[in-house]
Image: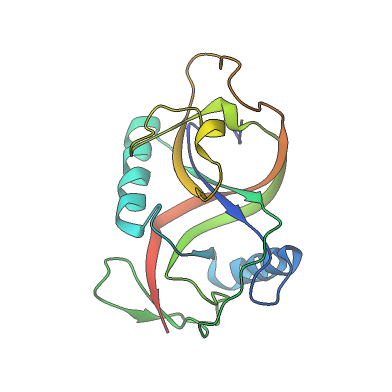
Length: 185
């Protein structure tokens, strides 16, 4: 369990744009010192900003806490050919410049979080997918192959033996409003 969080967004992360995962983590910790939060960029069709904002608001109403973002290391490297990101929008139409540099190469969107830390005992099988065609499916059965992000909630009953249940080491941080934003150069 991640800091007893009842709602999470899980995402696979790894080295990209010529930076190791360790370099990226260091840049995010430095970013948080400047901005009071850090921006974790991503692309793709899963967990776009509007549904992310809605999921986080739902979790806050239901559980009275902001969800955690859980980052699972993947060894595959992502190569970006997009330049540095300079602007963000919390509604997809009104853009603002970051007040200081942010490391966000090659991303369409960004999660916003704080307190990035390592967690040594996380089990995907403790969570169920929220939304989409796999709603209610154990996270360890959903997060496979090309699926690299998902909304999830803590199970209320112990998991049955379905798929891998081993504990893994992850990174975790608390999502903060507006939770996710659109990006542009």
